[in-house]
Image (cartoon, rainbow, N blue to C red; front, side):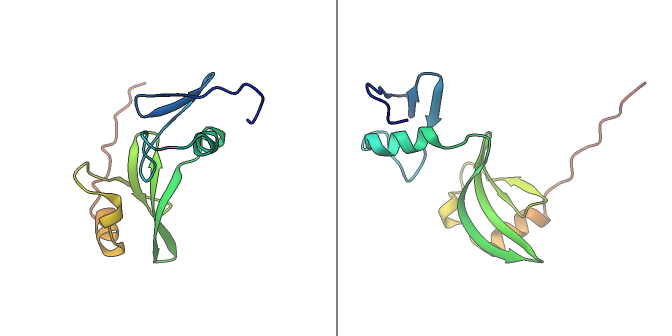
Length: 114
């Protein structure tokens, strides 16, 4: 992505180049992000959820906090739990994450008629 004449546009908490755009989240800040960091963000694969913090291991599963398409969530590889807006992921510890995963309500089964 370091082609001559490369232009990157900063707007509304995003960086954009042609059809690619990336949301800027902590620890980056739209007011002081560098050109090199913007290029790095644009080169990342958006299909993968970015791991924000690794909390540890529980029952053989790695418990991590990820930033996905619909926001920040906690996962153990099998169960995903959305992090509430009032909780900041940096203040979350392993025990709290395990309790969130254990207490997640199962989804309601949808009845499908033939």
